Image (cartoon, rainbow, N blue to C red; front, side, top):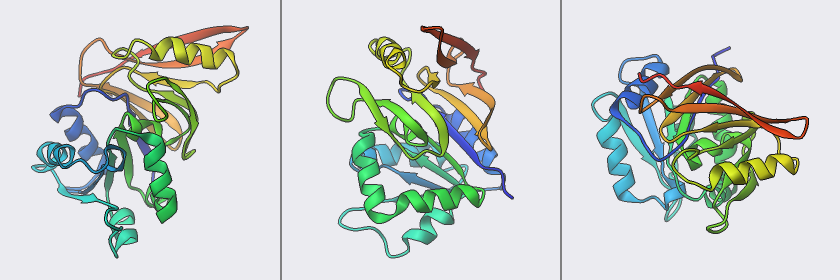
Length: 225
């Protein structure tokens, strides 16, 4: 069975070094990279940034749903070596994916050995639960794809309300999981955390949970690839 590799990223920052790291995880020369920008309403500027980041390292294409999905939708998704999901509105993105069955295709791609990654909304989506601003400027919980157990909170050091909102949710029974600073990626292989990488020195991922009624954070320093 192929390794099931998922790399959620805390959003806010990205780098050429992080792009190279993800391409190397794909395990082949000039892998097929599929960019999905649904959460940002398929913003062409965001797509161009991804071509700039990955274009010298991989064969890059993008998946769009407007005015309708491509006829070869399954081949596009399942045939990719690395799938990178951009940031934006997580709830809207998941609704579109589910209408067209992309959630099932992403699971199939994962089981076939594709690396799944993404930033902010593209990091939240892989978990059972996430902390999101999809429903307005206020933050709140939402259910996601469930490829990884527990919860995820991005933007932990670059959006001031993320930490207090997450702590409040955890005290109210929200499942524990992980949080990540801007530009920090958590490398999970078969559901186990194997590595933490980041754009900047001194940034962290955090294991977060409630113990005896108190929220506990365990920082894991990111290495810069």
